[in-house]
Image (cartoon, rainbow, N blue to C red):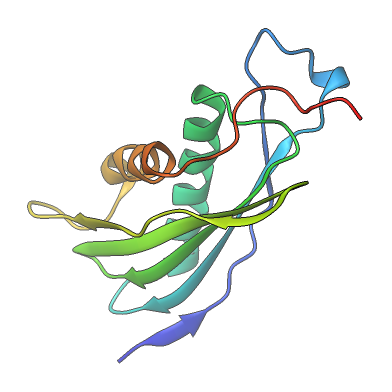
Length: 133
């Protein structure tokens, strides 16, 4: 049985240290689950995964002003399937679907960072500072 969940957790994504924060708009990350099954408090898991995507995006040097949405297609205690979508001045893009299986433990904090890195690393998110008009 799937329960549809919509979670909005807007999170400011810090820019790399060499870019002055006052000069660049921040990227934003929000989360949304299309389906969750057998997961206690899926909103909390999504908020934590979303925060990990924020950190991974900052480490990867994602361009300021990028609006990123984490879409959890399937969220279970032993499995995650999802992708990133983002908006830039050039339009909407969607990254590839990532499947992440959890063998020895249930979904929890130990899995959030590797999951987020996989999502960010497989997506072609825009890099560098915002282009000047």
